[in-house]
Image 1 (spheres, rainbow, N blue to C red):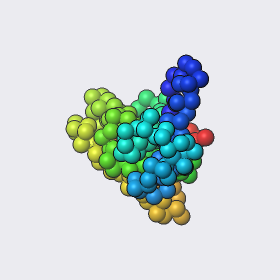
Image 2 (cartoon, rainbow, N blue to C red; image 1 turned 180 degrees about the vertical axis):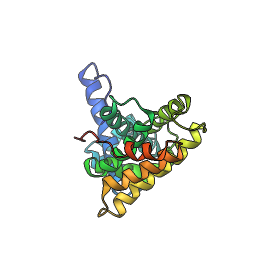
Image 3 (cartoon, helix red, strand yellow; image 1 turned 90 degrees about the horizontal axis):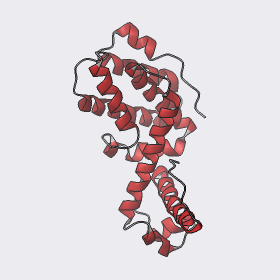
Image 4 (cartoon, one colour; image 1 turned 135 degrees about the vertical axis):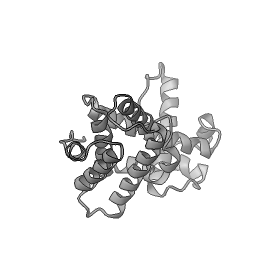
Length: 211
């Protein structure tokens, strides 16, 4: 889970733990079904907290589920950042982000099920992988690595491709995940103007292991 500065006293620590328990319960519900119709009582029971505790942290279920999606997106973005912190080439960052996402269906299944069920509405979110991908697209255009396209439009194409890839991984688990993701990454790079031979090479470079 994404982390922040630890609370300064026992009361604040317990309060933060209760809030995170509620967020974790909401993430599990989103991962299981994508359904936000669960009652507050059911959410509180799943979180193992008192019903009255809910309103100490959230004004509504909608606010809780939004917090759960943001929590998942930020964990997703941090995980990708962690594994690509040494990578400089915008083209390699775009390709590796797609390919690592495909692998995370196996290594982080709950996280990726949340993305599967709720990701479409967050393609242009200011949290998670979206701002990181937009940064790489903008840099790639500025450096001439990519053709002169509107980075926001390119992000729409990249985000839609990522969600389709995640859906494919869940729907067709028998497919070779790495080769499927590499093929998609190669197509995306060519769409962005990377020469074919270069795109093929970049899309199949070794990836760091996911823990």
